[in-house]
Length: 143
Image 1 (cartoon, rainbow, N blue to C red):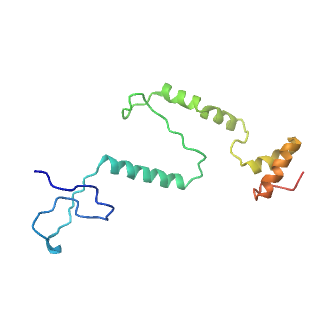
Image 2: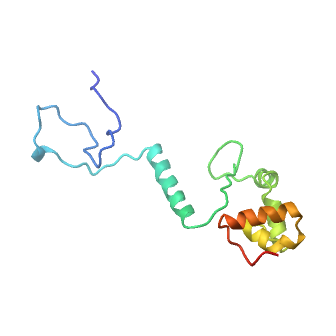
Image 3: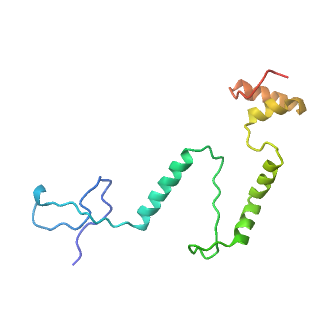
């Protein structure tokens, strides 16, 4: 005989969490809070995702790159060739080379236009004025 219902608590707070005796209405005095909490894979994932999002929100990331450490999806297995290949294909290694060479690789459009406008064509000057007129900021006067 299976009990009826089930489900995930319907959005309630910290509820009973276990099967309750089926003795009529059941008074609040007979209810006891369970001290054993079953941790599901789903709840672990949600907790880890929440921690990741909290960490990301404290930084200013431009993107998040996920890497697959091995082809078997097994824990504690790190295949360096596989990871390096993913970094190379994703352009990460090239971005590191550019940054090490001293070239700017993380500036806004308005900062770029303010810094390098003297190299630009007439069309780019028009784009610069459009960006600056939208409140893009990014630097000195019209050049």
